[in-house]
Amino acid sequence: MRIVDVREITQPIASPIRNAYIDFTKMTTSLVAVVTDVVRDGRRVVGYGFNSNGRYGQGGLIRERFRGRILEADPRSLLDGTGENLDPHRIWAAMMANEKPGGHGERSVAVGTLDMAIWDATAKIAGQPLFRLLAEQEGREADPRVFVYAAGGYYYPGKDDTALRAEMRSYLDRGYNVVKMKIGGASLAEDRRRIEAVLAEIGADARLAVDANGRFDLETAIAYAKALREYPLFWYEEAGDPLDYALQAALAEFYPGPMATGENLFSHQDARNLLRYGGMRPDRDWLQFDCALSYGLVEYLRTLEALHQAGWSPRRCIPHGGHQMSLNIAAGLGLGGNESYPDLFQPYGGFPDSVRVEDGHIVMPELPGIGFEGKSDLIRVMRELAE
Image (cartoon, rainbow, N blue to C red; front, top):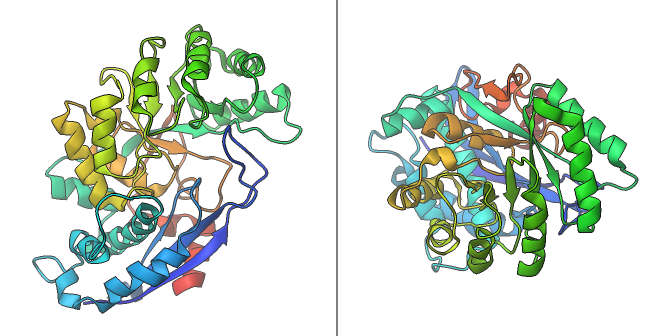
C-alpha cells in the first residue's frame, strides 16, 4: 500500500462579489488528488481536497515542497500501525519535516488542502464515511445531523435592498433558519439600513448573523457594536484584525451578544492565544477555525485539545468555509455546526446531491470518505484531475 502520486491544479472560483476587505474577481483554489495503489469496488482509491475560499490557490507550495516530501518518504512510514491504511498524522509529520515553527501564512493552507485529500483517501480505504471513522477513533458516537447556516449577503454591483431580501428569503425557502450577511463595506448608516431590511424579511422565521471580515479599527468596531446590540443578532463576526486580541477583548465590554471569530487563525497556538487574550466568552461566543486553511484535521485535533484545556466545548465551534470536510468533522467530533454557501464558490460549496436542509440541519449521507462522490458537479471536476 502506498501513495503513488500527488496532483494539483489551480482553479478559478471568481465572482464579482466583495466583502468589507476583498473582492473575489480573481479568487482561485487548489484542487488536489492523492492517488494510492489501493483498489476498492473496482476503482483506484483517490483522495481529494481543496482549500477554502478567501485564500488563493497554493500550487507553488504544494508542488515545490509538500508533494515531494510525501512521495520521497518510505511508503511504510506513512502507514498506520496495522499497515493496512494510511496514517494522516504520520503523513502530516512528513509534510512538515524541515519546517520551522511559526510563520504559518500560506503554508498552513497548502498543508490543510493536502490533509483533506489524505483523510478522504484514508476513510475510503477503511470503507467508511469520514465522520464515522473520526467518531470511532475518538471513542464517541457520531451524530449525522449537523446544524448549518447560509452565508451570503455580499456586496454586489447593482445589488439593492430588494435583491438582498430576496436572497435571504431564498435561503429560508431552502430550509435554513440562520442566515449571514456582510457588513463594513459601506457606511454604518447604510449597513443599518441593510440589516433592518433583512430582519424585516426574515421576521421570526430565522436569525441573522453579520460579518465585518476584520475591517474595523477599535473605534469603528465599538461604534458598530453599539448599533448592532439593538438587534437580535445570531452573532457579530470578526470585527477587527484576527490577530488583534486586545481589540476583540475590548469589544466584549460594548457588545453583550454573541461574537464570532477565528477563521483567519491558522494554528492551535493562535487559537490558544485567542482564548487567552481575546476576551472570548465560552458561554455565548463562537469559534470559526477552518481546518482547510489551518494545516488540516491533524492540527484541528490539537486545536480542539487547546479548547478543552481552556474550558471550551467543541460545540462552540462552527467552522468557516462551507465544505464537506468540516461537515464530517462536525458530525464525527461533535462540533456546533458548519457554514454553508448555497449559491457561491461552486462546485466546491454545498452538499451531496441527495442532501436537503430541514429546520437548519442536514443529515450526513453514508458515503465513503468525505462524500465528494455524492456531489455530481464536484466529483466530475475531481476525476478529471486524477481518474
